[in-house]
Length: 261
Length: 295
Image (tube, rainbow over all chains, first blue to last red; front, side):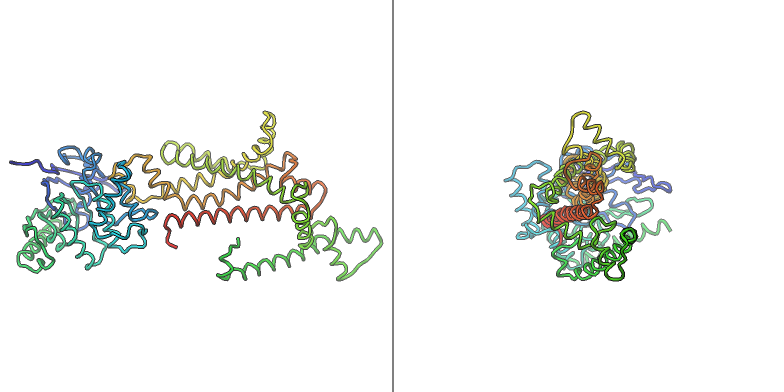
């Protein structure tokens, strides 16, 4: 039995009009993402990986081609609360405590006080931030802030997480730790995750499929399956299988770059 | 402005130094400005005083061109502590009359400014059409407009507090409107995108993002606005020959060449301004602390 893909893009083009001419951010993107997949978009800057994520989230409109999210338009999917979006920066409101930041989308959804409180508790627990409810964002480290923003995205209880280089600004140790936690989270909740990164090990460690993109114009160069199984301890990164996939991704990125030379 | 904290951060000494310099210059100016009149007076009386005696005389004229600091201080003391609060001569009473018009005008001006800013931010057409008029409104000399407003309102039976307050409103809505337009537009794109991913309505974006983000801009604006309100209220008291208020004291003083009284009234006005601005400052800090601003 074939299920419908959660995200289905066909020949997407996106051209930005800027002061000095137009920029082709996305060119002929065709991609299906199935329910429960963890898909990474990887590529150098300017390859359109963030733009593609923003199109899925209905933060940008494609100029040509078609895309459906949950079988409907990205706009309808957004209005239905289909996804939680995690930005590169935590983007917490500085005047709200951690608990109130997590409450923000719930207030907008108009949830009752009891439901709100239980979701705040559950999701802060999930990202190991219990006890920090009353702190303001500046009182937390960068990694903790980003965890709070993940809790905020999860509190909406979406079927899909869209993550735009969420750990890009963090140091390696914190990043490893959060990668591990994210993987656990994905394994337990079976949400569909679309994850933008420019780190090869991060992409290979987390993903079930890796979409290698190349710049100018932003397009898909290669899609690599990454079947490392569900159980992925951090030291899986030393295994030959991991290194083989990482190598393949690196080759893909290099080829993508050489196209333009 | 001097706050309690300055005593500990060492700003008091520089402030006092400047104050001392001002007092010295003031005494000097009193001698220079009062001397010609005094010479003239002595010539007619056939007297001739010299040196220190003459200087002391310039500092103790009953109606000097320029009153000396101690004369102003004595008058200020007399009209604040020395008379009953209900007395027509009490500067505290007159200050209160002016302050009540100031506060009413400030409240109306702040409300108007915020409403204008919210409209401008939400209706792009207003940004282009309304803002130039708002700026133009402030180029009109208030001293010329104030009598017309007072007289026109008196003609339709509106007198007392409200006309003065309206002039305060006229002066104070402007900094609030301009500051709040900036404040309401201050949220970064990231936060606006975040609200969009939640499909937040415009009013949710306003209440949950734009207004909290604008709070620092709000307090910076109303600090200017409240000082402008006080000036508006005093100016509003000038043309009517108002019976009460700091403006009326200034006017009465100039009618009867009571320069000492004028200066005492000016001091009262300055103290009102300091009190109001300090109040805004303290409120601002309190609100910021409540909003979790890093101390």
